[in-house]
Amino acid sequence: MTGTPRPATATVVPGDADPAPEREPDERPYSPGLEGVLAGETALSQVDGARGRLLYRGYRIGDLVERGSYAAIANLLWTGDWDPGHRLPTALVPDAVLAGLRALPSDVKPMDALRTAVSAWGAMQSLDWPPTVEQARALTAFSPSALAAFARLRDGKDPVEPDPSLDLVEGFLYQLTGSRAEPGTTRALDAYFVVGAEHGFNASTFTARVVTSTRSDVASAVAAAIGTMKGPLHGGAPSEVVDQLARMGSVDRAEAWMRAALDRGERLMGFGHRVYRAYDPRAAALRKVAESMDHKPDWLQQAIEVEDVALRLLAERHPERAIKTNVEYYAAPVLQGVGLTPDLFPATFSLARTAGWTAHVLEQAGDNRLIRPDVRYVGEPERDLPG
Ligand code: ACO
Image 1 (cartoon, rainbow, N blue to C red):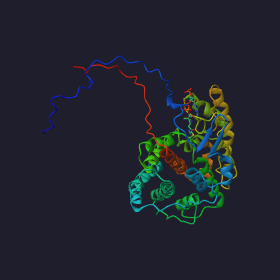
Image 2: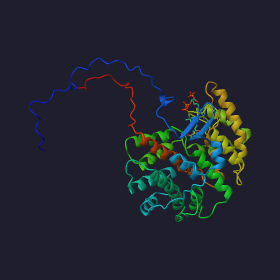
Image 3: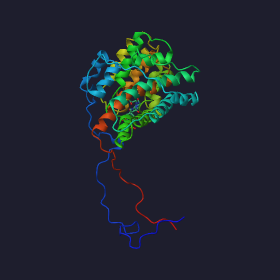
Image 4: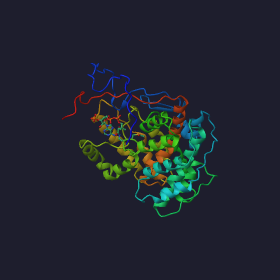
């Protein structure tokens, strides 16, 4: 191989071989998990952990659950406009994405299938910089159809095409089951979508903003966010709530079971939050929804009674840190009550959060600066290679 010859007189730059100048120790504060660190500004939602309040663009979450729909809330997040009649039907899954979903083995996790579908969808769009409200809308409308298609394909059924007369949540249920959902079922799932739509700088939203800050596209940001939400400490909890309640068996056995689990260092799913020290307002809203559902899961009463025991045990174990019920605890009965299987819970949470993720993508792009924090080096000091 012939290389370009080095210039005879190279510019003198400090080299690796030169003795390292003396280094000042880095005394800047470091917060593990970035807890308590201000890492940005947003006008989308206010999460007031101390007082247990959640506002979307200033509006209280309880009011939005009662008077809004997911489509209206998504539009509010993207544009700042409150239009309670706003509609957002689900969108067709392109053939190439369907072919990809068909190629997946039937035991693939729905979160992996959804992330794959979003990625494939993004590959087929012209998602130029900067991202737009239209892109956000298109991706939010596509994702429920993709998840519904995967859920049917793995059961050996054909996907159902979107019905443009149905709004997003009703359309999702229709494409999942092939029949129209009862109004109470649609309302309950819509309330869940409203509650799940947005929540400040949680791990997946922060991921979406980091991706966007590089001027990458909205599908890449959302695919990365889905990957982040997949972890059990973030979006995997509601299915584990169902599992834990089943393993406890009954309210009588709950205290002994939970004490033993805590002794083993396990976590009680559906409790604790990085920001909330008061009761999560989303859990309060979803408990109301769960209790008013036509088809409640038979373990809802068990969950309500176990909650009190769990809160007492967590307060005993952690008097220094208020650990309260989080949104996932009452998301579980709502999602099961509308007929979803537990393995679809995390991916359904992702569908709901797509409005928030994409709103953050737009907000980040609107005043962009590459997100690139520092890290403190704690490894070996400079040294010579052996030999
Ligand atoms: N069960 C038992 N102990 C808990 C729980 C819990 N659910 N939550 C926190 N703790 C304990 C931890 O063990 C830890 O104790 P230690 O210091 O003795 O080790 C202490 O409280 C602090 O815990 P951290 O993990 O540092 O607190 P963090 O703020 O990071 O935790 C988290 C937040 C990850 C949600 C945590 O509460 C948890 O794991 N909960 C269970 C999973 C869950 O419900 N996730 C859904 C969250 S909501 C959402 O993402 C939409």
